[in-house]
Length: 123
Image (tube, rainbow, N blue to C red; front, side, top):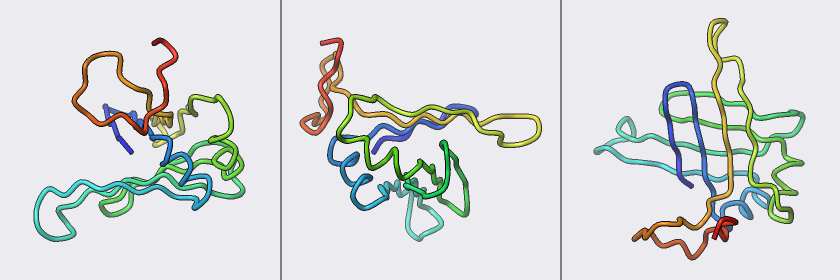
């Protein structure tokens, strides 16, 4: 799973196997370690949650969690839907834009292993 953070926007991109894992296990987790010890680690996850109607997010400790309705997570591998997008109220003054999408094969020459990516519809 890839994460992109820009100002008040969080974007997750998932491979085929990660979309399947979300549907079956209800969670996908990634982490980036900046140094020794748990305080030097950023953890980010996507979790399916019952009883919600749209995307949501929280930041607790060193972990970013984006929530997706479990019905959407379970249906996602079997449909053509590219992703989910929503802006949620982060503070009374600002929103947080959330985007969760399938990761497509890049159109340029990337050195990244893209064998588990979705076919790019623009190819």
